[in-house]
Length: 416
Image 1 (tube, rainbow, N blue to C red):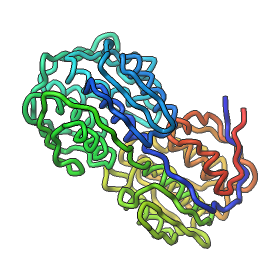
Image 2: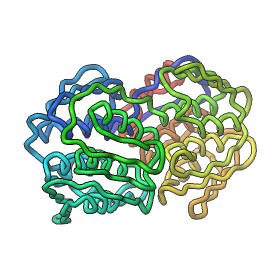
Image 3: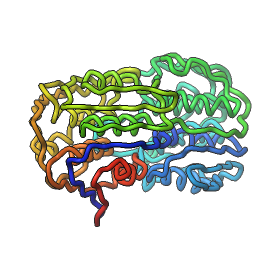
């Protein structure tokens, strides 16, 4: 099993290119199931999850022509409408094939995802939405089996804001008869990116980016070319890493408009931030100030940046509260940070972090994707060597993170 070894103490300096967004790429790849024509996706990140989704689509009969950071899909010979447990258990985003398959072929069989380290992510919202559109759904032998002669437009209200639920039903509604209205829909930039791709394919969608999305179904969708948006979580992670190490970095090929709350909190922590087109520059001098954060659905503070800001608070001046409202088990990195000398008290969904002068290197274990990123930042600021075990989580969501950090001056290497 591979590990990362980090010798801390080097401020990050220089420029780094931000990759395409994993959370936008995965649903947009599933959009290839909606048409027999060619869908060309550019700016795809080289990630384990992207590879898994490509293999799943190929297993269903989608042809995939691969080039550097791009794939051309063609779904004219799809003959398998099943997403097996072996695929879904490693990547919960596989549930996103459900809506497109039922919409185009009238049949889909997708494994239930099973447990998730960071907490419950119920799929009942996907099921209820498809049922409202006329699908007959049975749960049998650990699989969701959905059938429909033709999906019908419907008004669907989400009890809980769900990003994948919104995306799945938006794709299903694109080929349904009539008008579908998604109320209390997710407003994330990745949802907008999917809507942009679907519109390029001929879908009729309005209201994306708000909590009320309207989709007027069309008879069929056609091919398109779509450029995947930059990864706002990778952008935020590198900015926090630079702030924590007292560095000065420039992110290229990113967007500031999808990072509003993160940039506000970094400014509050004492960072100087300037934006120039698709570049963001951050400079940090001196010790950061503690900043309290509370996660909530977009446009509030993103849960995927909670762990990174907790590390920043660990070595900041003062105390701060970190409140997690999205996932019930997303403080598993706390125990590992304590091994490095962090002072964190947890009660329920609230952590109180008291900043210390420095962290000390040790061997730690990653428990999920964003916890892995937080431990990398901790290793960058800790005195001595930090070894991070189970880094396969990192490869699911960060493209070549050790080489990118190395070009910024970090002393980091991958070991077996």
